[in-house]
Image (cartoon, rainbow, N blue to C red):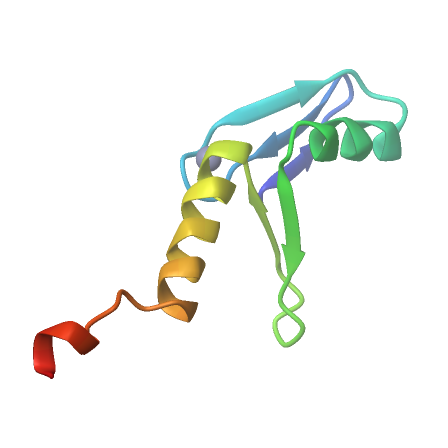
Length: 80
Ligand SMILES: [Zn+2]
């Protein structure tokens, strides 16, 4: 679990670097909106129904990895 709710705070934890974001309790959705404003990523796996949270730094790293997979480096010039 990367989200924990306590009597006195909400805590989100980045699933990659374990960075924590702590908010006062009360408005869960306001906290989510704040994290989204900070470019945290929230994704849910449809099969396992497990949420994954990434802080903005790890989100950038993950998105860069995906971009590298989708757009492979140009290799044509090497083999032709
Ligand atoms: Zn992170």
